[in-house]
Image 1: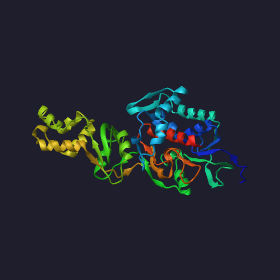
Image 2 (image 1 turned 30 degrees about the vertical axis):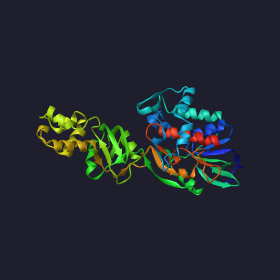
Image 3 (image 1 turned 180 degrees about the horizontal axis):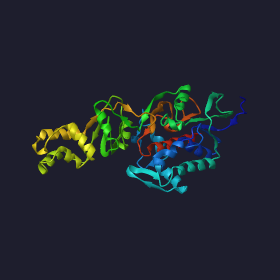
Image 4 (image 1 turned 90 degrees about the vertical axis):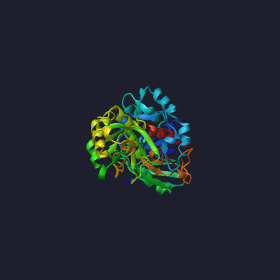
Length: 395
């Protein structure tokens, strides 16, 4: 195969997801000649399926402490310089209607397609060239220029941006390409792992799979992290927003604690004993939890008979267990069900101001490819916008 003469650009951006599209648009509008490359046949595929198809495009409560990274300070600069308000203003300019759900999460009123069309419109304004539907087959660096081969075409530029994300949701074409490329240029990679992902149960906890479909508001804990949202039992284990949140903090072999009665104060079972001495623990729990869950928990606690006949110390022990029920997951549902990837290109190798590699001039990394992972609820999109914007200011 004979390559055509190289196309010359100021910057080549690999990956037409959220961070790549936004970075390309901003750089193009700053007068840079930009090429955006993606192996998929359409840009923004993950955006289209996000938020149940409505795209949870940011979170008004964005703050650095809602992101995981080996360097918890790394995200501060980018997040401070491009804020949720900045992106909301862009959404408003394009006439996209949106609404706020719980916990500061902003969603499109209509389809997530509106966000992709907005980003493509911004790229068009910046004169960005888009090469789709062919994988990158070679990346070389010589004479202060990066040369990228895509199909039978080759492009070159003094700047290269890695924005190909992580391996989460492989059915969408996600791979570890970003990490392979980073390592080629001598950048360290923090071990990637699935994040915002359902947890699987085995052993003594396997019977809870029988509760598949049952959900309840809880406080879930893993390590020092705690989240109050809904938990959902599945045919494989635990899911729901509270579980997805703590999954990012969970490590294999560690327990996850669940407070099934987060609104009850200490001594509530003793109060129930005095108010309803002739009722069972299962019925008391049924006043606060779905019936099937109440029945299963009562069976595991194994306090038979009316609560009026039970000593206070047994009720106190039951309370303690219900407020910190320990599950030990045997794993996660993996990248196939993970919303994002934790870990990635190490931040120690990057400038927090520009996202450029400190030892490789002209090489940048943005978005999910970097070791910065947000909470569930629009935080990862805001990191994509902020990191993409930061890099674009330097291109």
